[in-house]
Length: 111
Image (cartoon, rainbow, N blue to C red; front, side, top):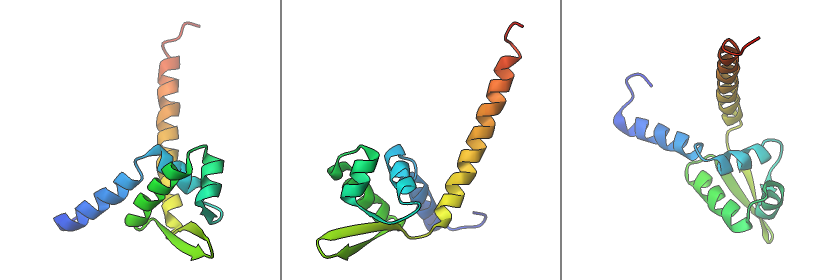
């Protein structure tokens, strides 16, 4: 990010904002292994088709997913699979922080 112009930083922030919603993260996780349509994603996620569609639209606006029409169905897939490396990196970091916090709390527990 060093020496990036303000416009680039705005685009980066918007990208991370698209990833900041748990519903969108769940949808992306469901798209990890294969493309799916809205109905499949709604069924697997437990969200309504309208809600899933709204989140997919947002992800598409930010270039994270792309849509492909096939007959009467529209299928979605992740445009850049490296997004999962980013998410896995963040998840690993959060898991380490949680483990450390748990260890720190254990120090104050009576034995």
